[in-house]
Image (cartoon, rainbow, N blue to C red):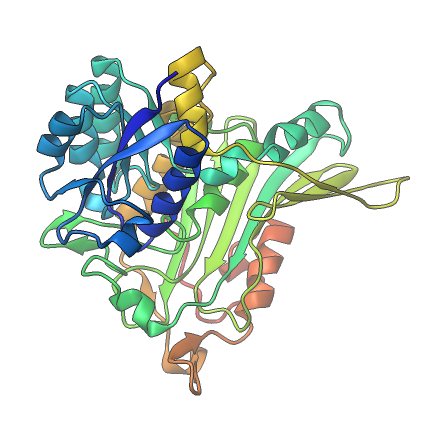
Length: 377
């Protein structure tokens, strides 16, 4: 079959990853980079080869290129309107996470996409890991006994320039429009989405309650040191702790707690550790299906989509809870320090707190963090 024409909206920043991935699939004969939508045109080097048609007008570019797929990697507040622009033209979508800054915008996008009859994939790449169905099978087989909860941990390092990379970075709102660019909703959103997926609680109706603790060490609006505890219809607790102010960067992971064992999933590495009574530890590594490749397969032979919008409804309930929570608490100066020569802020002890939250399904305040705010419902 002929390569599927693709238009990419947002080709700088994280969009550079999409440029490289589209070029990879182009070499495999699956897609063709037909156009790039950017305010400032890309050079040949930035485009990773021959420069396709470029325009700052997304709708006009879709029309002129005859695109069948649009990859949207633009600022969070633009996701819904750009997705609907594509859907109205019958163009299928790969929409970066978070799909929207509010639950209302998410529903407007998801309903519009469904009404238009186009396919939409949400860009949670971790949910393309073959480890996800493998862990679900282990749970179903009773390998770790009855599941009691799921923890998630993300201890990352970001310098202060990270929060100046774009006007919307580190903002909860900009010019009266929701952004919600916090640690749990954007950089470590995969930890939340993956924890919910392993609990089997991906749809909006699977969420029964949400508690949030949002803090910030950096001079920003949004949270950079946060945790959330989600009650699910299965009767489980899903607790995810995250920080961008770690002492040392670590691989984020999700931890499934069972009555007789547990499973740890390092989702960026597709690596799994199974620990259970009566057995030695077992480690596994898995492959991964690229989400754009999966979308192409869906269009060409009906392969099921891995991350359709309805499977991110529970995640969007978390985004909405964080959006509606009180503004994050500014940590007192005694709670953080600057790292000499690195232009970043560190919260001493946060690495251990993040791990302990995932291990015990507790919030920071319950672990004795003196700076932790009261949980917000």
